[in-house]
Length: 441
Image (cartoon, rainbow, N blue to C red; front, side, top):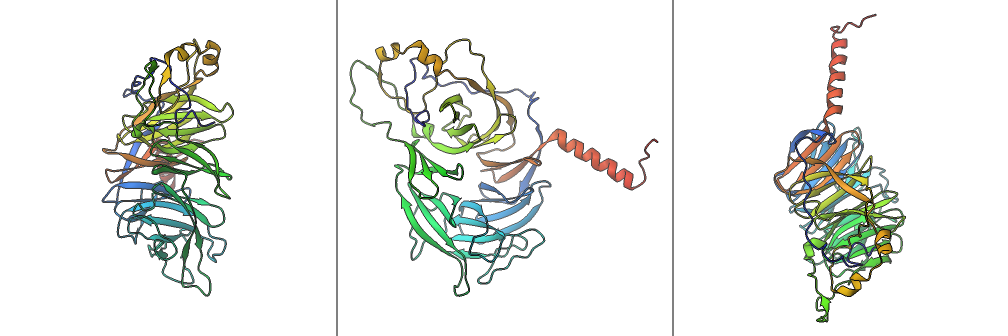
């Protein structure tokens, strides 16, 4: 099923050339994000953004601080200090079953080999716990610092690079090539504070894990630096499906074989996934792939969507997709149905291996037609604002986009037409309040 991504087939002769990078002119009529607001609070690379509610988000990165922002106004609400080194992962969690507090939790992991658990209460509330200090999202106090790398939990020098929440008060942490299942234990009457217990280690990846994403209530997915992709059961943590070991670095060569160069690891790294009811959208190297769940094959791709690796991808309404890259760009794509004039073979993914020329020539035309690309990814917007690698972004339906970058900045991208309408409405309301607006009867 997933062989499309990591070299399940072989590319027909003549298609191995690098496809050109799509460009778009100054006239971006389909790009609504024409206003931007630059936010400054961090003094190092901003790597992470997490949504707290409909109008708040938090940012974190290499300066070790977490900043809470208002997504509508760009106002800085809080700065949370607790780590002494860069933050390597951050997630939000619902209240734990055993915890008396029913507020949302924030969990951060750092290169200082600690994990901090903090509360994310409603703005009108003051967060308290029965034991230990608190990180309060209104006051900035620390909730609980837990050294998860001592006693029962031991992690190698790589540190935690990604976190996701799974059922039963557990989280999955990516540490180098390993996945570690932790269970969060809330403080009780007889305990001194929070605890994080190691439950299990999963050692199926052969290289460092770059992407770790929840897919649905039944599974989560991981992708590695060399293009391995594994789907895991979210309850028992077993492998449901996997794609790896497609390339032998020392193949037995035949003089009659056509030899094609294998891609570099950076060209096959799986950095991020997203999905909807119909498709899975995957960032692979510099490209974007759309895999249809019903047809079980690739229906669209841009093998060179950016000049450098694509770091994050998300689905927008109206069959649109957004991606950001190490090259500092943020691009909006639209999935469009293609007019099939002739058979067009499916791109086979990332590992290009050897194959006999006569075998390629014998492929039936009918098979090519069945595998023809049905859709195209057309560039409709190019958001230029950052001067360095754009690490990730958030999409707020009402408040636009938020991006973070290695240039230490966060940018709010606003829908210009919507913002103009809101300003006009606010102006009329103000004039009416002051009695300066007279409506004709």
